[in-house]
Amino acid sequence: MALTSSPEQPLPVRTVSRALGDWINRLGRVWVEGQVTEISRRPGMNTVFLTLRDPVADVSLRVTCARAVCDAVGPALADGARVVVWGKPSFHPGRGTLSLAVVEIRPVGVGALLARLEALRQLLASEGLFAASRKRRLPFLPAAVGLITGRASAAERDVVENARRRWPAVRIVVREVAVQGPLAAGQVIDALRELDADPEVDVIVIARGGGSLEDLLPFSDEALLRAVAAARTPVVSAIGHEQDSPLLDHVADARASTPTDAAKRVVPDVAEQAALVANLRARARRVLEQRLDREGRALADLRGRPALAAPRRDLDRRAEAIEALARRARRCVAHAVDVAGRDLAHATARLRALSPAATLDRGYALVQDAATGAVVRDPATLAAEQALRVRVAAGVFGAVVTDPTGAAPRGSPTSSTAPPSAVLSVPGQDPAREGASP
Image (cartoon, rainbow, N blue to C red; front, side, top):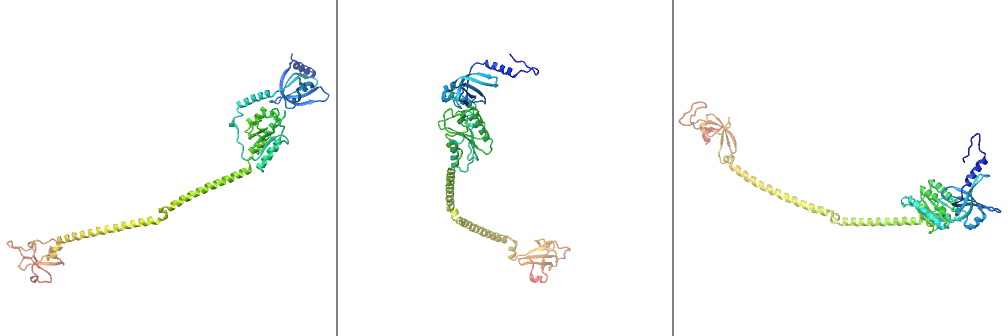
């Protein structure tokens, strides 16, 4: 039945507490699984108090049981143990607390734990948290290495000493947490988030020594695994020994078989790197020397070729060929000039033989009218006192037509029965002595 109340008629605390107790007491006994924490065995008391924590969620429940029930479990009932309890929820009105009154406690066996871990592994694998594609590469030389490990543990000493031995200048940021028990997973998650938020930390190592399956259970905690998958900084898992394989090994970006191996994986060895650099330099030097030798031999071969060994030889040969061509050209031109000269001489001789000058050389004269330049071919066309120009081989001179036979002057009528005879008179000469022109 629901309780009725109002601001004017509130319910007393005892009534509410009694009602809560009645509702809770109606619940029967139930089997509950969880992780044991905070076991309190007070001397002189028959009741043992402990806390049962949910391994996945941040939920816990107060448990009370008889000392005989705890003693029946034996040494397996310790902090961090996984158990299954059978009890009845009860509410204590006086203190207002809820607890689980347990009458039987059974430790969870290794087989059951392995089955639960396998189920969790399959769940995370189906979500892709184990996929190799999401894993990030570790930095070659981290500026700072984050280390999450137990307080003053051998794992911390192994990681720090080996890392500094390999690279003395390495900087390690250590976060000491609980590495087993019910508080381990939460503290590891807090340290992981703190280091992941540090911009100088380039890689985070989660390290722990070996132990039993129960001791390593915090590193298979689902909340821790999801926190590692969500981290932006690469995470290296170095839990236990080679045979140990918590689920953290599958989610982390890299797995180291031991904490010492983790130091070797995250920090390079300065001696190895120096030797590697020396080997690379020697290899580069050899390659360069071989290249220079090959190019030198090729250059020597080029220089040994006749064209480069005696470059003037080809030039001299070309010069000789040019000179020979020039001589041949001169001979051809001289021969052509000689032939053309002889042809010209022959043509000149033929021309002179056929020219009027040759006739003049034989004593003939060319008579022309001084006024018109017309050649006189017929004496009948001449008139007395007509000026003529006479060309002989040696030159030209003037002449006048005389009429020793009584020819009429120019313009007078002449006899039609006999043509007048023309007589040339050269000024300054006696025509009778010189004789008539032909």
